[in-house]
Amino acid sequence: MDAEPIVYVVDDDPAFLESLTLLVLSMGLTTKAFSSGLDYLNQFDPRAPGILILDVRMPNISGLAMQERLSKEPLCPPIIILTGYADVPTAIRAFRQGAVEFLQKTLAESELREAIQKALARDAENRREHNRRAEINELLAQLTPPERQVLDLVLKGCPNKAIAAKLGVSSRAIEDRRARLMQKLGVDSLPQLVRLATDAGLRPPE
Image (spheres, rainbow, N blue to C red):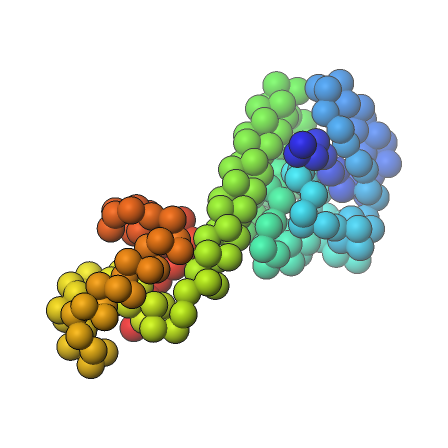
């Protein structure tokens, strides 16, 4: 059973942090509150599903600096920026770093609800894609070096005869390697193979 997603809230204003936490709870969601970015980062676990609501201006580490650090993680939680000091450069930076929404603290409750649902949906999709890539990488790890050579050349669009000439082996050997790699990867056709490679973010070497 999948773990329940958590709405993490980080803000150094105690009154706002409490009111926002109560609002999230009223939506029937689980929430955890932190008064500093460092406190959140110290307990961060990319395996735990959830989203993050961040203030911008905080001591020690700002919301945007937190966002930048988290963006380097294999699974970065979708982030909603809430600020009392909105300006265009800050908003641009937040969106460039992948923010789901950039909102002012005077927002309506309906706006926050919509932003949270959008972020939760994105987190679920990100985790599905991440798990799919992990599964494919496990399959790819089963390929022998010769099979991986054939895979890379197939993804470049090379036919069997061209691959055979490039690798200095017979066309029959290439057919055998191609059949084995497709069996290991659980695909029956070239379109399925291309789709699998796309899902894994696989790109053949230049």
